[in-house]
Length: 100
Image 1 (cartoon, rainbow, N blue to C red):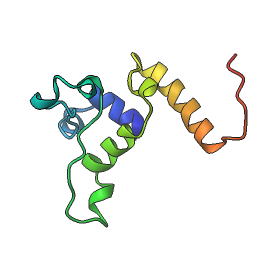
Image 2: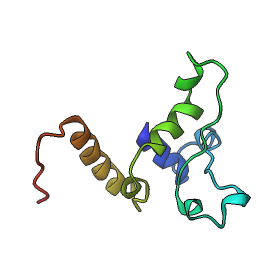
Image 3: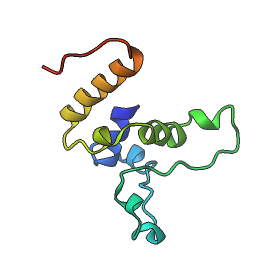
């Protein structure tokens, strides 16, 4: 889901997916520090059982939960490498990873 959101926000996904993703950049936020983030807008949902699993809701929720060094990756290969490291460290917090 995170890789799909990366592709959609960088124009590498199909058009129908890119249209579902909106950057949370509102005109009233442009003077705030948070305006420089790449966070996505999570739409409100009506049905909590099904609506939260829909692509327009689940994708931005996953994306906004990632750290800034992941979101700001310049290439897809860098994003995937950092995502793999992030998910590994989240799954196994007791294991120390050698950065070599």
